[in-house]
Image (cartoon, rainbow, N blue to C red):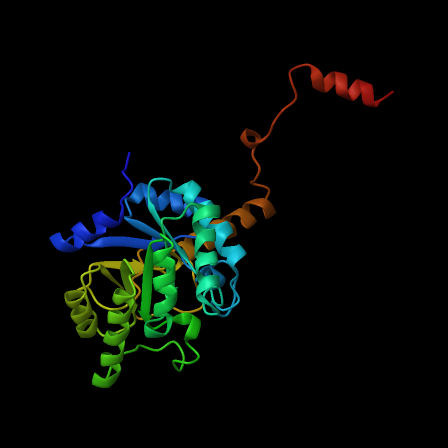
Length: 282
């Protein structure tokens, strides 16, 4: 049986140059697969808004939705480090709201850490949550909850001045007390600088391989999400085609009378059919 990793394990992995692997998961069966595959961490991301509910973005996702999915994932992966993703407006309003909602993830879904987006602008939120005894993972670069203010879902830090701002955010997140950091859709040159500069583990999603680990959206990895595929995604299988082909085959079998077969049926106990028919004639 796998032993669940803790914060000190991720720090040791950074020190030893070992890469941390994590994926998103939103439900019990996918979490089971992730744990069986040996993932170090699972993020129950607010990307569930698009991948599960079909929203156009992450903004509509609620705390209650996140808690329900975190709870299911915890049951599916009891020995994996689980991260709950704080949805839009669960922490932006005040430090008090941030701590209260972060606490819900631990109390109601037994997660190991929370993640929230933003750098310098959320430093006080990070500090307050950490002081409440909760493990925090920062998230900078392309931050989907505020993508409108960033000009859309675009890579960040591609000019020298923009890169300096991303680094400023990274330093602010570490100074505020965050235990780990996720950088999204920034140039690998910038991501490597951040990973080399910060003492906390720095993970990449679309930020190159020089970080301390990698994150991907599971729905992208298995080809389940169909709306679009980010440049940084590698599809390891095409489950959408597999499932669609299976459903087509089912439809064909039903229409042609090939399903169900006798082996798929529950027959009456021997001798009961005759009794039943005789009874129905009365």
